[in-house]
Every structure is written in structure tokens, then in C-alpha cells.
Length: 267
Image (tube, rainbow, N blue to C red; front, side, top):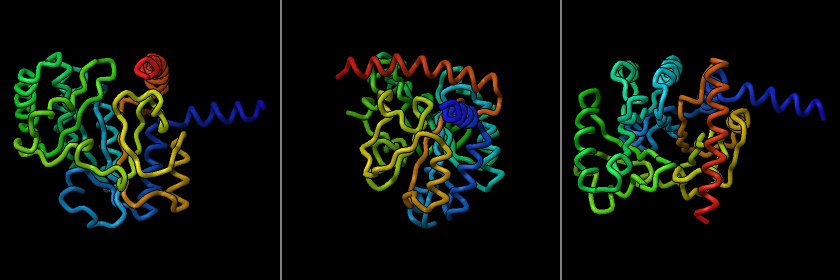
């Protein structure tokens, strides 16, 4: 019993570090996957056989995203980084550095939440910030921010508007068939956080579930992963700093309790 508790704590302490994230990417490469951005995948779907789309929601701590981007670049991998407009995410130096490493930059929009559900205001806000992001990168994909504590779903902006008229080729929740693309998200700081996820949910065609990152690594090593995968990570969670790691763990556990309560109330 003591041994199993020790093993659990040890495996927890190793998870959500940059080190184990790097191990997961290396396992994917060794299993023959092409590690790519969402935009590059859309331009040539299926061109590289087995594909691992690397998506990142930069909700806060943008320097963490830069470290993730540097790690990926060192492995020859490219990903997509979606930045919010809030002060804790929007950081020109970091955006430029990540772009210069060869990664895609996208807009992590939350205009409905910021404009309190006023669609006209939200659309103007979206246009303004899309233009701002395009000063750094010719943005081709966007992705909603879940805003779990808000009553407004940011995707409602597209109920009567069309993002494609802004020369946007895709939004993952609208334009990916998750029955064919396996979706792997660390929402709630866990790989199986559906119970505490308010909006980061998809209709998956796969009966696969993982708890620890090591289980994903094992699945790559054993050839059990689907041919096309999109991961969505929040780089603020992935760090080798014991202080930041512990802080994120405690904060996320508190958020999960609140979100779990909200999910139960909605039912």
C-alpha cells in the first residue's frame, strides 16, 4: 500500500514537467509521426502520413510557451500558438520569438466574453485584434477561449457571422472532424478532464483515455495511437520549476472543484 502511494506521488511529480512533455514528443517522432502546426496540416492534410498537430492555448505565463516552442524547435517540430488579448497572454516579444522559431501564431478569441454578449461590439473587437495579431503573423487559424467562468460561449460570435470572410481558413471546433482526428487535451491539468471541462469538449470517435503523460508515451511506443492526433496543451502547466509547478497544481485543483460544481448545476 505504501509502495503504491509512493509510486503515485512520484509519477504525479514527474508529470506536467517540460521534461516529460519532451519525452512524449520524442516518442511520437520515434513512432513515425510528423509534428506540425494546424495551418500546415490544413494546407496539406495527409501529406505526411501519421500526423501529430501541436496546438497550444497561451492563457497566461507566455514565457512558458516560449520554452515549449524552443523545445519543439530543437526537435524539428512546429506547432500553433493561440494568444489571448489579455495582459497575461498578449506579449509581443514572446509572440515574435515563437514566430521566429517557425511556429504558427493564431488568435485565441474571447470577444463575446469581453463584450458581455454584445455581438456587434464583439465583432468589431475581433476585427481590431485580428488586425493587431496580423502585425506579427499572417493569421490563418483562430480558436475560441473557453472562458469557463463566463456565461457567454465565444463561439456564439459565429452564429450569424462568418470568420472565413476574414481570410481565416479554420477554427478547430468547427473545422476538424474529431471522429477522425483524435483530440488530446490537458484541460483541468489532466488528460481525462472531461468531467471538469465546461467547453473544451469534442464529439470523439475514439475509445481512448489517458490519465498520465507516461501512458501516452507508452501508447506511442506500442503503436496504439491513431494516425492523426491534435493535442491541445496550456503551456503554463508544463514547467520544470518546482515553485511554478506546485502553484499551478494547487490553483488548478481549486478551479476543477468550481468547474465540477458548475457542470453538475448545468445538468
